Image (tube, rainbow, N blue to C red; front, side):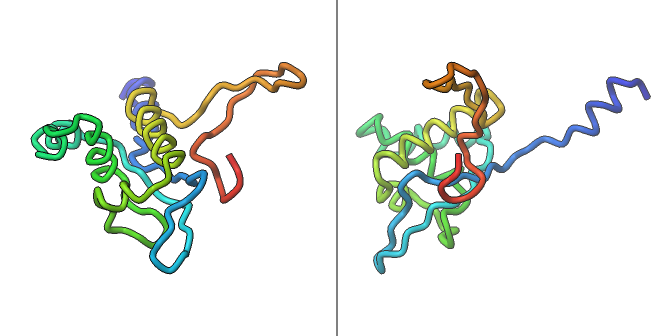
Length: 134
């Protein structure tokens, strides 16, 4: 077995990414859920929503249906469907759209940022580690 093969087999593919929503999903009792998990999208995840009548009627609905397929959990809600995604605040929807793009196109959740005070460049994990962190 070559060195390249050994290295390739030792790198496990990360398929799920934990996240912390900026605002959070609010349930009917007023409980706020901020932590969740998103999985990598498959080709099927990107193709099937195109057949959805809601998407055919309004192309903007594509991101709702797509996120409903790949978001595995928000708080204790593990039956994430389009209705759940629709209830998110706009900031949380934008966050999940960006996270989707990062993990499916760039393969990571890191963002390059610059400190406005000292101009130091560094990376931040936009998925966050715990509530209030990023």
